[in-house]
Image 1: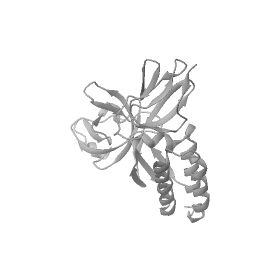
Image 2: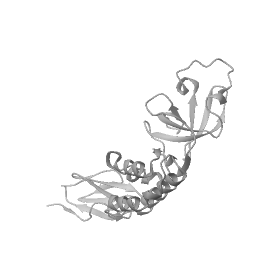
Image 3: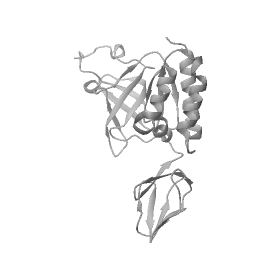
Image 4: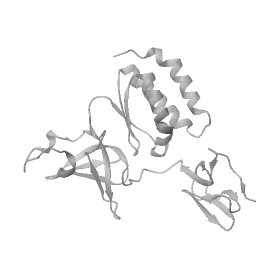
Length: 233
């Protein structure tokens, strides 16, 4: 008979035995050794049916195909834009993937996306050498205007978004802000100054307390207590 030694959302360290027996299956961040399932990294336990997974608590973002990111334009070449992905790797946005409009040869590309602009884009390819290609063609992919940008730990993004977007929806409603969250840990918030400040405070609270149970109720209580400070636009 198998035994699970941990509970959902427990913090575990590399080498820790999470389960014994063959009833459980190793998932991301774990491996099997004989009858034991062992943690391969520092992380938060996620029990997914019979599978034990770990959500990492540290480490930089690594780009993956189909991820949606918020990136900053850092350079413009003759036929592409260079993007900061908040990771060790830059991304390239080519003319073909930048817009559905026809761009004439020699056009001033800065009129589309200038250095310093932030964009919401999607990864279409990551090569074995970690060359990252992105597109701006797709629902919700756009240049961001106004608002403020903050950076969070990319591994906390799922917690900030919540199940089926429940956590971020709660923040949007209470703060009257538009919020976009990239899987690379860049967050765009646009609303009144009071609304933006409250949204930042709520997101930082989630980031700091992501390992705690009952977090949704804590954030709901925090927002309820402070949302009267938010003025409607």
